[in-house]
Image (cartoon, rainbow, N blue to C red):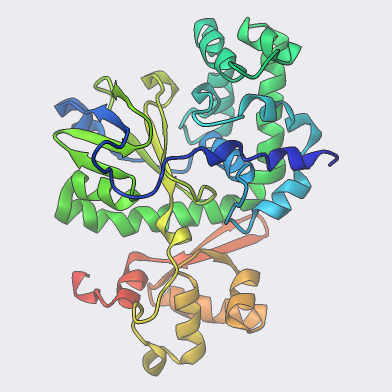
Length: 344
């Protein structure tokens, strides 16, 4: 698509600095009441529009680390270009990403965005940048035709760039949640928050994030934690009313960003055989059969056979979507690799 380099504009580069908050460093503080803590939970499934927003931001980073980005850039549809006017920097408009697990429901929530929200969030996208495109001004005024443009752009971007990744998104989501449930059971929410990213910390009944100064409240609605297979940057916070999915914290899934380092994985080649052990280790990151075969250096039929055997042993799970198949570790498989088998 002509002009697609505009996606790689660095709009998503203005993200929080790495590292725990230091003295004098700006902090965003999210105040949590007892009700908020009681209602904080992992999402039941990935949210398509949350992945759309995370995916678009990832594509706009100067140096995206996600391997799916080049293919998505080639597939980027012309009808999705209006999203490049809307998502220009962080924080981006939150009305675009209701954290609900159904695409059609999410698009209807976007379509029903109140005019006051549109006026506030859309106008913020061009503040200090000069005169905005006419369609954006129409959207800020709540015009139906402009909203039709947004809904079509979201749907077409999802279909072209996100849907091909959906089986991997689902398996990565499940693997990350399964990996963090033991942390929740033994260390509580404070330890879970601390494990999501180095810029997050739990202090004095508040979630702190080193970035910009500010304070907000969850409003007694709690927080939905959504691991993303597409986003590789610091966590993204989106505040929504309860009927639009509630508050959400979108973070980079551990299964995607954590690679096995020297000495971290148990050597299972003597038990499983060298190839099967390599398959198990490769599935720390969810992969399709073809990706698994390429990673391990074997044929696709052989990779499928090994994955089937590991699945029969309860170490691997498989998600099928149409003709596509994606494999990932079960909690038992991950514990076996990490040497924590007695937890099971």
